[in-house]
Length: 209
Image (cartoon, rainbow, N blue to C red):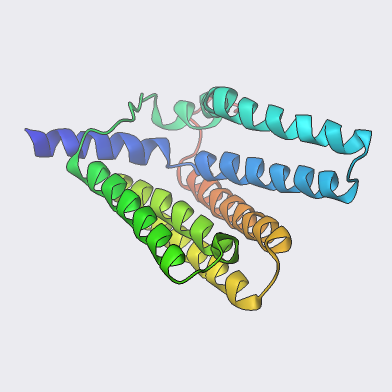
């Protein structure tokens, strides 16, 4: 029974991610945040900088509270007419999710202990830490949905983070570059997934969407 429930949840999540809308939306928000950050830093102390600072807060709040609704509206015009409507109820319903959360907590504790004992600045490892955070979230998505592309995205994010740390760039440059590159990769992944989905799943006759 538990195995059947797990498979049902997995199929529902696969359906939710079948069109790449999740990656497109996250990639778009990340890139927009990086652009706003760059514009804010390019005009320090000015009124324009304050406006961009407010815009970044509005962007985060808008993405948090309105992102799902926007994706839902787009899916109503692209995905649901082709393959039907399914509600995915996210949650911590299986041991794999709990194991990933525990692993993340253990890593954070170990990392803090390591940097404390070796007198290493946390900022020096910023891109790697962000890459690990993003990687864990993507691995969780890949594990729960059984979609291999999320493992590839996790690996690329970690690779970019490690490369930026090795490059020796300051945290002011390396973090925006990290998020910018990962935003582009998510957009590319989502666009390719959506393209393949639209080609393989044509709209029903009489539906002009």
